[in-house]
Length: 412
Image 1 (cartoon, rainbow, N blue to C red):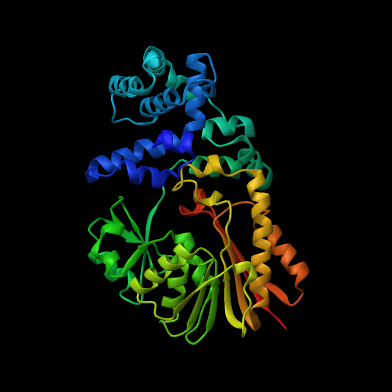
Image 2 (cartoon, rainbow, N blue to C red; image 1 turned 45 degrees about the horizontal axis):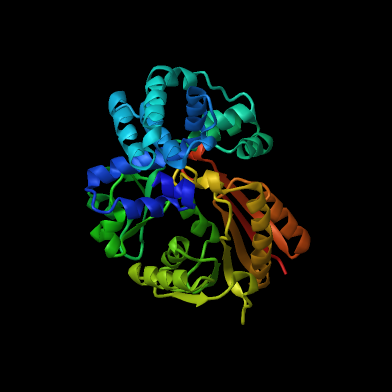
């Protein structure tokens, strides 16, 4: 999985799914911990490896780099794996693709077992450059959050990005309540309190393989994501437009909040994802959902909508805990490109909103260019809109994904 991610640009979750076929639940959980952790901590691991090998990791052959990252992750961050086992297994792995480097890997990892913990313990996060190494993020991201949030908030956010993600579920109110779902779960869990449909499992489990999932009683969805549909506040009988709707967690939540007594038009530009969205709506008993295959930025409404949700493509910087490779994919350039797409979609949304209607703009990122500046620019373009509410969730403060949610109303 490490090699597919860093050599072929594969997504970590998809790559792991392919290579972990056939593992039992316990081995799959351990493989996930190893693989995701080594991707997530790549920046720190490479810093330690470069110090021990006396050369930058990007000058090493890819299989050698992968073996060092995997071995050092176990040595530095996992208590349950003996150091000698991490060294031996990593050496065996590299022998298959780069046998001449086995001695190097063995020497570096043995030094890592002796010196690595001291190297990591000495890392600080006083400056963005130091924080990037300690918390394993690109330097531009550490600098962005230092500038936009302030040093203390940025440090806390960066540290939270390496903690395990919450295992949140949404009870589908069209089938059962959160308390009813809680009583039927096969693992220990507790109510998420806000929103009322939220449950947080105390340990990971195969939610997608559960009969409760197949019956449409629940779906995995972070508590922050669940707040979005509540911000839209759809009422029974409302006409609701959901732009960029797939995979459908928020779409079907909108349907549940209306008691499936409204009309939810869900727009998705990718045909395959639109088909998956239709299947999700059927599974979750959301008969009020009508999926439209089309470009959200070019959407035109035959008649206006009472509620409009804009959940556009974004950099996803609020979800680093559950998407370990995302920090290495996002770039300042990609954010700049996304802002143009977001602006076009939010303009289409505003055009589709009825007088007196409510528009919600939501992202799962923490970037002022994609959040606050988008809203400020929209209000400047559209004097008929008024800002009613803004809410931001932060992983270190709220123990859930980082989301930006802005609710606006049309006054004319």
